[in-house]
Structures are given as structure tokens and as C-alpha cells.
Image (cartoon, rainbow, N blue to C red; front, side, top):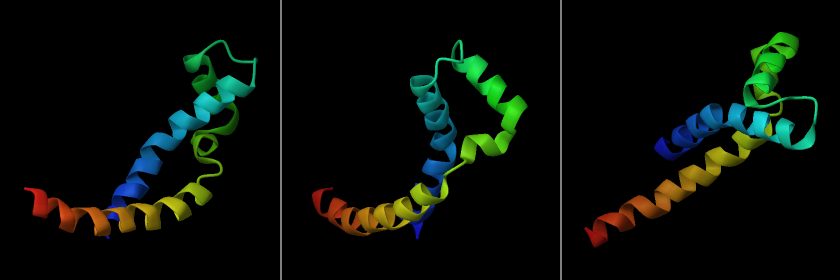
Length: 79
């Protein structure tokens, strides 16, 4: 459960930055990071930063949960 929650928070915090990065890479209409953020907020609101987040959330929860489940018990063996 902890791994799944960690993965969700990781996606929720990092996804908006990735969205801006992709828009800057694929479009020449923005003058930079701040211009992209301002334009997105003005035209799409905060929802624009999280458009398409469902797929990463569905994939990251089981990935991080399994990662924690496999890794944490074995870490204590090396401590």
C-alpha cells in the first residue's frame, strides 16, 4: 500500500512538469517555461496540467507497490 501511495504522489507532483516539458518540446508557440505555464492556466485552467494522467496513475500504482514489496524485505538483510 505504501508503494502504491508513493507512486500516486510521485505522478501527481511530477506530471504537471512533464506536461509543460512536452508542450515546450512539441510546440513553438511558447517563449519559455513561464510563458507556457501562464498560457495553460489562462486557456485551460489547472486541469490542463493533468490532462491524460489516468494512464500513468493506473500503471504506477502496481509498479511501485511491487517494487516496495520486493525491495524492502531484502534491504534489511543487507543492513
